[in-house]
Image (cartoon, rainbow, N blue to C red):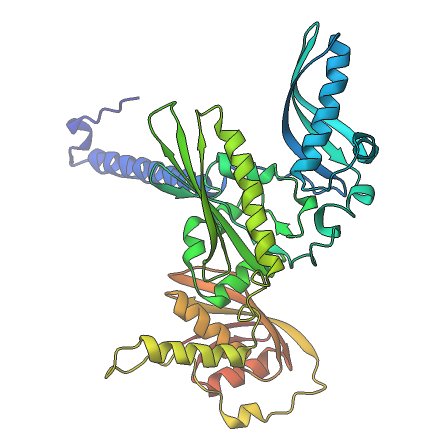
Length: 424
């Protein structure tokens, strides 16, 4: 729609009609800007981007088994195809050699993805579900492969066409992990759906962050102890042609490398098959890391406030240029505050607002609050880099005692009771 503004309507007259026109058009422009801004903000969290993962049942499911069987009749070919699929699924799980009858006794159902039944031929793509109580002693977490891991947040990163993404759009790598049946794996994957605000928190840039306090906040929202980051890089030879995939298994806040491999897909139609196999192989890398003791939660994520203060102090000494004065981010609490007796004081929840121009300000404010005696816990509930963030603090003695302790550290404190605002 085109809008034409006549110069005559903006001409100032003695009677003020031009002024009214200017005000009218100014208000219309402001309304358009506000509407566009609101649409852009909603577009950040709305949209068709979330893929809910399959529920982890107690049974063990293997998908993507392709069979092509001939027999005297189509019905007999179908039965033979199911038996063959059960054997292939058992082999795919890494189960020991067993008679077909023993394998069939552990199967609870066969899932038909696609099938074609002819007079003497049966072609299908099937899934096989094994009873966990019967098959668990031979395969999966109960087969003597070691203990199950701690809950690990899964962030699948897709690098395609020079763009790295996680949950911004519905991607094939996210879908492959959402459809992965993780019940047979000893690795406890925490798989977000990627809908709503999760697409703003879990991004490809998040995987390069090193701040333990930041990771503690993110992992706390998903009840996870650490993070794993499988990365898939897809290179298309030409549109609709072969696709080369490079897959890397990484884990932890330091983005530690575990292993990598390459696979090929003949076309776009063959891409889901390649990604499904890649997920299984990456899960194998994480299994091996768990068995060797590499896939353990980083202790620095849940370290106490004093340990974090020491770590930040050492990091500042290493990164600060020699001869420069390091900014005081985490002041040392005074001995008077450290020796204050807060035993027996009732615990209260206090909301603290603090200005956060950068990530270092977030770390400094959290460390300062956690360093106050009587603070039982402090976690950010709202992060706004470049604005004002909010943390929820559980402290013995209430907000007044917390405010006095922070003032003694050099903070400017306003407000009172259960709502405080601190700044430098």
